Length: 171
Image 1 (cartoon, rainbow, N blue to C red):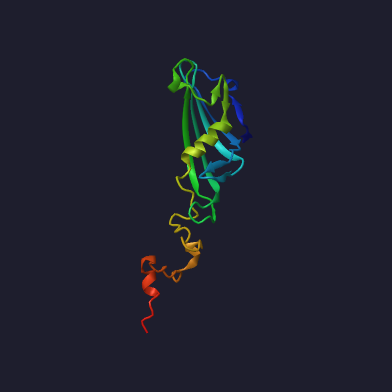
Image 2 (cartoon, rainbow, N blue to C red):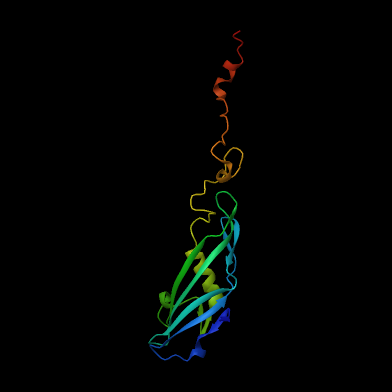
């Protein structure tokens, strides 16, 4: 596998309708989600990039990989590392309009690192959790409820509206 951030598509010398499968390695930049930083693993990550030459001199591209995010659980702040699959597609056709102009292709150069970073951000789970049913933190004492056990509880604070009645001495 070749580690690369920028790949020269012109070096493939593809004719219209021809394609190649590339096995590359790329380091994706960390993600910032909900104020926390998550590392993308593995680093470098093996990715498969399928490149096809389109009629009109453009490219149809597909990026696939398996990845995980390493960082704090969004509910209990314990270590989390959810795994997920990435399957992203791009089309770059010069003169084809805004929808057919890939931001990752400049001339014949493909910015694999930026594409991988954005693909990870789109494929990542909506919430990074240590486990799917993570109960989070206790709202009173902030202990992790997953490790606190069923006996964990707090007495409720008395209703302040009854404070004057508690001051009465009825003995």
